[in-house]
Picture 1 (cartoon, one colour):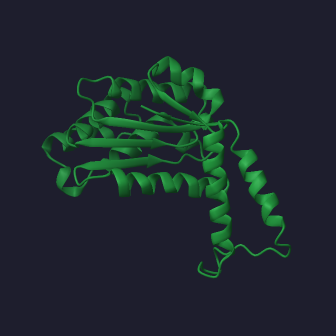
Picture 2 (picture 1 turned 90 degrees about the vertical axis):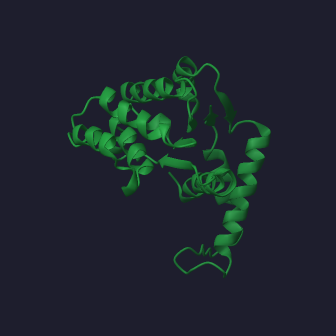
Length: 211
């Protein structure tokens, strides 16, 4: 994943925090890495979401009872789902952001989607999903979430937004207001346009799915 992709995902998280979040709402996020098999394990993703929902004061007797089972790395998905459901029940709204869904092996992706489908379908569910992946995952998504809302990076308005974001980011990185470590220095300023075009082309096939 390029630094521009990471910045784009981070801007989504920032928007959720700044624009959508209230004191009784929470945003959790998972950015798996294609070169880290542990991060692409469904149980690991669910554990990460649980950890992000917990504060020290939240560890009541009931939570502690669940956590005692949770310490076992081989805890089954049902046990993990039970704790996640309990954690969600204490929050007015939980936003779950999962990046690079297409990087998961089919089996792990379906385990993860099945868990999310179960949680979302609960009466008065308080969880909202924001998933990012390539179009290859759409069949799985539509099977588990037939009512999902989709946005493809191939459509004109999304491409325009991505292009504007990339241009602003490149311009910022070339400016003097950023630290030397973050500054983009090019011997040929015209090369910036090639970078912009390559990043926009690289976004083709990416889909954003929310429900």
